[in-house]
Amino acid sequence: MEPRNIRTACWDPQKAGGYLKERKLDVVYGPINSRRLGLSLGINPIQSVGENTLPFACNWSCVYCQYGADGLDESVKKGRIRFATLEEIKAGLEERLSSNEHYDSVTICGPTEPTISPYFDDIVNLAVEMRDRYRPEIKTSLFTNATKLRSRNVLPLDYVFMKLDAGNEKTFKRFNRPRGVKFDDLVDELKSADVKRRIIQTAVIGGKDGNIEDLENGSYVKVINEINPDEIHLYPLLYRPFPRFDLSAISREKLESLGEYIRNSTDSQVKTFFNPVNIGEEFRF
Image 1: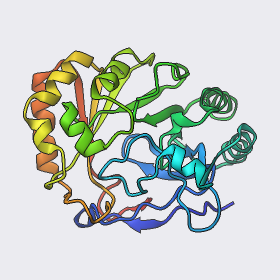
Image 2 (image 1 turned 30 degrees about the horizontal axis):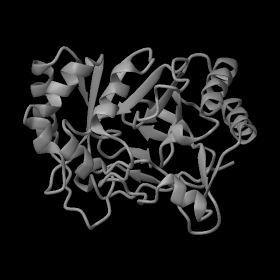
Image 3 (image 1 turned 90 degrees about the horizontal axis):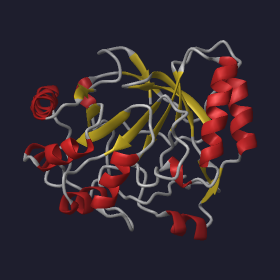
């Protein structure tokens, strides 16, 4: 079955920040071109209800998020979302993983925070089980803002990419706009999460409402040294955000310069991810 949410284009770095990311409509979607995971088959635990609604529900409302600003309670109350069942996810994974289509990874990643699903722990076990049965050679992964990891079942996953976009409470509140989450609590989660490899992912964004100044002024490095992750992944703005914020995509040179600064200031391995494919190649988004 042809995925409903995937578009193709020929990658042009001059349009970075101008591509619109489509809704991840299917419970099991893609594969999409991931800057870190290759061709990634996705699992979206949260689904929209009705026409012209976004399956968005999060305990953050980041200024660069292209999906919207409704919180979990508001989305449930208004009947905009539902949680995908284990039966739906299993059926989708069996259909796609038993096919001849190539995948490099199975990734739990929606247009929202996956860990808020009440079935999250079982979804992790199911994803690993289906991977082991059909594609034992590929990786399993999760993208998360990490605010609910302490009690979550994430150790079975190969990669858990945990978000940290700020170095202090002030920037965290302004840039990530969390709901009921304190910066110190997030740092504690990042330090104590039971993961195979501690990987921090950080969006690097310019503009008046961006965060690059905070990443360069020493506060971010101080927190990184406290967390002591194995890896730090830096990436720029790729999709067009809502116009009410003054945000801009940074250059490859600026990203590499920041990466070098962090690399020299921490004991962590630093990786930068810029374009999803080479110039002129077809990519999925």
